[in-house]
Image (tube, rainbow, N blue to C red; front, side, top):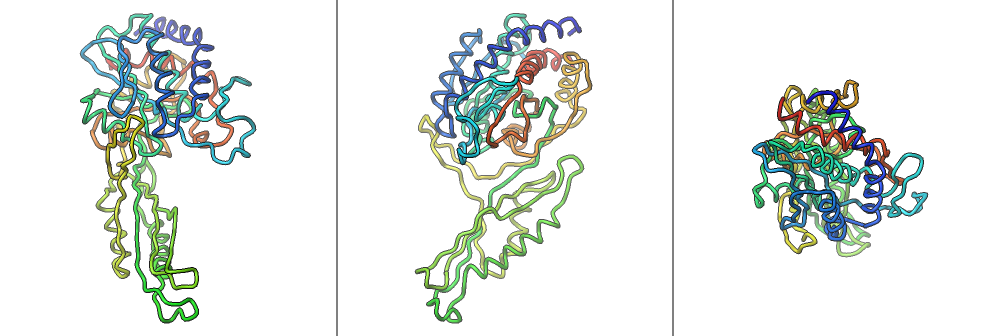
Length: 399
């Protein structure tokens, strides 16, 4: 692809600035918590059809699959279309679902995390169709469900049940227009400890499950300091994110205690290694340690079960997907891109971490805006992201 073609793509994206921002505002105005995405799905499908996608359909979980082209090279781009809730509305200076443009930004829940990526992808599809770019590749644009509750579940379903196996996937989570090529993994872990109840007036007669768990918690705090690090992804971490104990009454020694762990996995750490570390701590207390299951129905009613284990992934710095992303960035914006990683987790845990399909990330909005009050996405980011998504497949196929 020559530089003039880059210029034409960018010009088209700039020309669709207002439409892209308006579409994003529409998405924000439709609340779409995990498992409640039906209405926003319908709006996305309508826009895909309006801008000229060749095919628009749903999978069994209710994720949107838009197709452009019918060439032999299969490339996908993904945005999750569910959002977290708004939290304490007192922390917002406006209605979180009032998507609007002000001061060069689109404001509202999901603007950065991550409906902005969805809006930019749809208008990238319009540019690809208008310029006839999909001559020897097939592009799949996916708007996936339930990521906020169970990252990667939607792509486990797409790969295993829908047999969608592209050779590369662009993840459009917010990157601040940087190119990302990995993230730490994560897993949720539950630990339960039993005790023996007794009247609270005579605690020496019982065995407090809470006190037993306190020793485990202290050991986990120390474990966090010893976890390994990767030069690119960073250090593994573990934090106790919830604790609950109970007994026969509030005037009794508690005979049960439960904690929930948020475990972040760096490169080389596995489900087995993480559980073994905790087993060594909990053995003296007969602790029960397990990974919980996710089995919540999608808005379609389908239940697709998975353990809450999400492996780390990274794409090599010299992989064609990363080099293609860099070349597209340079060609469009005449600048050198920053290549980095996400702090949080994405659908890449399934696409790359479980199934080995290379991923590269590029998204409008800032990672720091995810799950934050007064969330926003710069309009200019939408334009640049749409141009990048339109250019990337043509560049990648020649890399």
